[in-house]
Image (cartoon, rainbow, N blue to C red):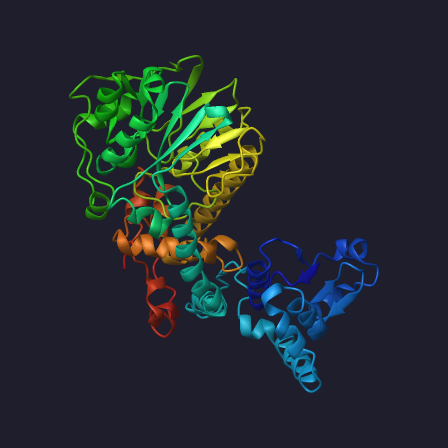
Length: 508
């Protein structure tokens, strides 16, 4: 167990590295709380713990300062040779001295104590001081984590590639075939999972084909339907779309005709299907522009119940990711087919369809249900049930209610932070940066995906849209400046960051 100073930027960065090097979580990192120290180990003194890092080993021994650093290096797999080198005569004293120097001066180096400060505006300070300190802390945190950010540039593309290869055009049967996952793709759509890890799939559940993919995935879908066999195809009773987005509705007509069954969508989705709006270039290129649906057979509106082959599913309003979103819930199976109304717990670069306040309401509704199996819209099934077998890159062992609660807590936290920043009149680029303090894992773990999405979509998917999503439909949303904020411009350290700057109505 490592005890660290949670208001020190350098200490927070150190914890980030420990968590990266210890993916199994064998080393527990806990912030210093005076009242808890005696229960952790009788020898721990609050003042000593604040002077230098303390570590309680599994055998009960306590290590501090440079000795704690050597212990960690010697027990974190790849760093074991470094632990041996750091303990050599001569180098041992050098490591101890270097650690003591950094520990004594860590607040001066961190400037505003690890991003935990609130960018105050005390009247006695020059107008530019608070934001200058904030940005100094922000960029210090950035540079301290450059190796971590570089690691994400290697790790995540590699992980995305492995997941893509493992599930390429594959069908996965779960729970004795009650739930079938058909991974879809095409030449251009395959760029999505490789870059961003969001695979495309269609679900087969109780005679319903759910979210049949985009127009560029039609051949992939037809091949899956052909492999199901005639008997299985005859069991289908309908094709359903959870919401209008192109990877979910593009093949409604195609699937309905191929199976000879009716197609269903929410009333708001049907309105959009009649004349789909033109998508931005990148979405048209990678996923495909949807054509009008319902031309071959009418798309029927969903009510509050949907009859499958043997079960009746509840149709739940699930606005947030998009205004027309619905989810399907089977109370007998305790299964929630969420479409994109779950996605990841830390989803930080939404597109302009997202209304985060309505999404919070949707998550609150989900948590009122008894859920044991949760499907998202891009390739993952979350459950702890044994009848859903071990399928790497597909089945994740986590309880759905835990994940939904984590996402809800995160979104509530963001809502409060944004409201606080706006009420204090802070520039929106400061508000955006304050949502991603480098000590929080989503700040650096999501950085690769978020900034790549911002760049490739010309800002349509971005952290800036995250702020707009909490004011969707209000004048405040229109006052949020450009989708490429000043945090992209390193020269702000010597130019604009030194100014207090205008309030929320500012533009850049």
